[in-house]
Figure 1: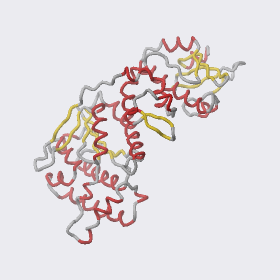
Figure 2: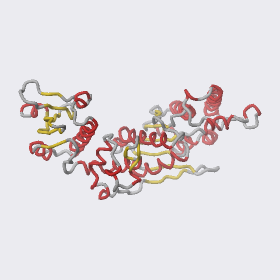
Figure 3: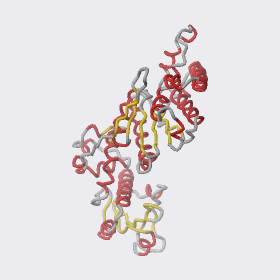
Figure 4: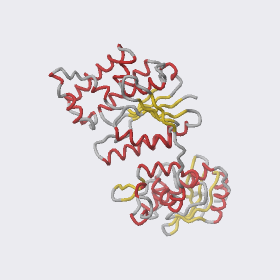
Length: 377
């Protein structure tokens, strides 16, 4: 089976090129360390010049040395060479993603590795840099991990049926490795490391049969769905939810990195069951009947996620439907060929919900294919 290899990228490929015995370079490592969490725009001119010099050396090192020396020079490539037993041509049909930090040094290292792999025939190699991902602050790191989780959910997890997902965690810094080791237990088929030393033996850790205890989530489905939709809740609304699953942003309670990970694992099952009661929404019997007729689990999940988004928007606007009219996804509007106040908004290209707004509450009347809802809203 073809693979998707997710490789975390560190900066050792750059720092390994410093000539420690050269007096003119003796403080280069310290300078790189001091700017390790800076973007290119915020990195000093002197350090940018150091990065460029080391980048040129690293490229030359990889181009004109043997495989053992390449593996010693780059932890990331060490893992990839180990995975393919030094036969990189075996990976020509695989997809490689290099995860770099949102820093000048991380991006520079990722570019070197990407170009090297492409030159070796692994042309389907790309870089993903989660916005804000660095260890500059706890907040920045957490936001970066959240962006990484969101990307994995959208871009990588849908490939699991046709590809073997492999997390190559030989490179990168320890805090990112720690998070991805746990994330990999949910999303990867296997995680690989390399024992340090002369032999560079590869170790593979298969995914453990981890199952989320949904009974701990089920009583708080509305809260989880709303936070997943971007809502910030009060302390009282999440007081009984495990604090490991809850973070804080702008003095509001939101899903933590682990909360998002756990929710992503169980939401398909939980959101495809009973219709949830969200703030600012009321369901007429016809709407409930339309929901109960849905047989596709994914359609139910999508509908409930959209209802959570609508609820959050209306809560923020105190029931003013103009936020739905301005939203590019929902496009709320009133029917022009009727004398009453019935309106509609879109769930997807071909699905609609008809509704009436009254006293800050959106009353949902029908759900279904656009022609059917428009005929009898």
